[in-house]
Image 1 (cartoon, rainbow, N blue to C red):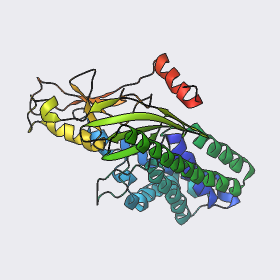
Image 2: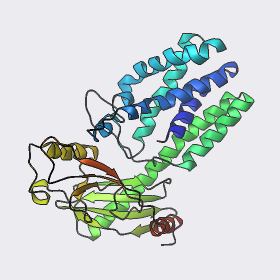
Image 3: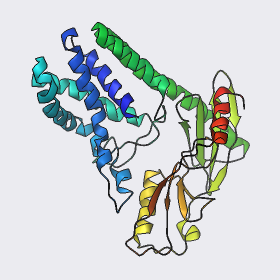
Image 4: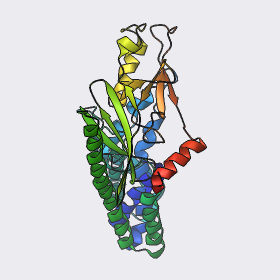
Length: 334
């Protein structure tokens, strides 16, 4: 999730456990600790663009790292903030742990993937219940926290945290509804998917992107699950086959290894970009949910030497046409 959401969620839990006289400092400790795991974004390399993908949401987001990460936060924040407010180090660590502990679980509610059980496994957990940015989720928490702080009312922080639990639960229900429609679409096409997932589209849990895999292809569709269901059948693309799509690549080269790293990051949903034969896209993400205009990709080079990394690229399909199509899906006009 975005840093603001991570911070206010951490603050809501720390304030929920505090007394009136400690409400402000508890909120500050929870806020900062709730954002702290994303400091892993600074782990990157100029020569290896995929390093950041491997380390983001890795050890700092592991459930086993919560005691360590929160201790580091407490060691820093207790002396900077909490000690002068009369808190003991034990209290500071508690508030930091509550804030820090919310981060990875909230991230796992999104579609990106979080390594909750690192170092035992590098599996990326993605429960697909909420978009990475969703103001309908964030704003009520923020408003309740502001009033909780102004009125010194921990019960308002508890209401905020309850909302933080309710909304992803609604997202889970919506996800399951979208998956049912996805299976129906596949059956109508006489397909037997190997796997099928529904992912919330940007900033809402009303319109979902359904992506499923058959033996040779990926299919993407959009489904609006409100009081009624609206289907927007989409596009399909052949699954990546390195030997077929890139016959010139050396299997022992760094580019070949980077393809497999990107495949792991993309949970296997990779394909050759139909608009650029040197690009490999992550099929899972697009602004318009039933399209294949990927938000990120890697680009290969036939002239690269054996030690050269691929190029990582991001794409923003922010054209007026795309925005209008998405808005029409969201409002149910199409």
